[in-house]
Length: 69
Image (cartoon, rainbow, N blue to C red; front, side, top):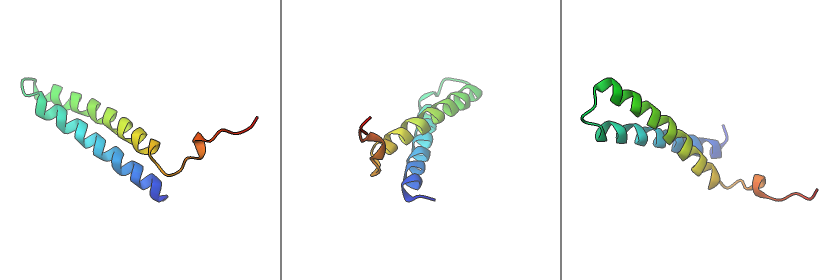
């Protein structure tokens, strides 16, 4: 597997865990089922956001170069 892809996936997992734990720790008054459901939704959002940010700062900038038409 490409080292750049491994780095992006690592940050995506970090974002998913951060989103899940944030919702679980903040939502003390909700029933456990709602906390888990909201935590999973936040984990999905964190996964996407952290992966996109990590990909944006990757060393491979070929997709950002303009090509003559």
